[in-house]
Image (cartoon, rainbow, N blue to C red; front, side, top):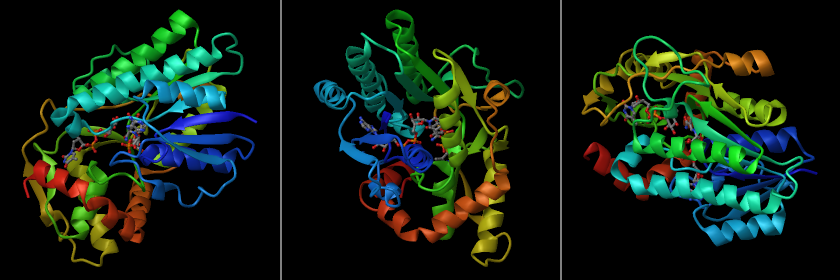
Length: 349
Ligand code: NAD
Ligand code: DAU
């Protein structure tokens, strides 16, 4: 039986990764390590948390002695590291949270894994889940490849770039068996509504303004979160040690076109007159240092490991809208309290 530590499993992508591994590999023992920040929500795992192979450990990856202790206690075979501060706007207002969690937290995990594994790395793996934002911002043409130079532009992406460098350094220096993947923007159910798509769905539903930064011309490459989980599975099981893989949907949208597509779906689902939701679009002050365009070339992953995204964007977007409309209570609980304070400060209500 493989013992796998998955960090950040109560968050958006982590919860989908845990569900995928629990359902696909009943022979693995999965440990979800999460401190439950505002973004961590154990409700995301309600459907699998009674599984006998699932274990939850509440804890902070920045707590060095605690992290060493859980590695000594459980002797994990592998780590899939997703825990992070993940929202660019928050990194602009509170960069130090990102430095501690994303850099120091990753270093703590690497050190703890090294101290347990160092005498015999056979069968061990440290899989670091990262982002395409480490490559910076593209102009109108071109794609991010695995060997594109790092050029992070926000405190968030700089902290993720630092963590990637640390992971590679531990491979080079200590021979730690590592793999890194860098993925484009994810969307789907269970995403915290500070991110564009769930924020817009919730505001449209409540007939509130949809804030679009600048002119809405920035471009993102969107991937359905379940497809990210399947890519992590394929990479975890098949990638060569020390390799990096880009993961993306080959699915570029300007923010404004995406929001129009979403508004159309929402009008249909909520039985509204066409154009009702789009009338909520409101252009607001741009994000500081806003990256213009991300676009991933994932041909290495597709050609070498045979992974492909399973869904067309329109289908995924509709499934996502259905999820949020069917999970109204999840949304209501999430947007109350602490998040309401952030929203009021961020969008001036
Ligand atoms: P998220 O913010 O939804 O979840 C992060 C999780 O990490 C939460 O459950 C939180 O409680 C936990 N966490 C935060 N700090 C912690 C700490 N100090 N100790 C333990 N747990 C802690 O994030 P997400 O969008 O699911 O992203 C997960 C990972 O994937 C991140 O590493 C992110 O950089 C990466 N990523 C995200 C995207 C995206 O589009 N969301 C794309 C590519 C890569
Ligand atoms: O590319 C991968 C990254 O995608 C991940 O590493 C990050 O964790 C994840 O948050 C995401 O970053 P973005 O900044 O691209 O995602 P976000 O949903 O915050 O914004 C998407 C685009 O929409 C971006 O161009 C900013 C814009 N935006 C966002 C918000 C929240 C708006 O126009 N209005 C908004 O209110």
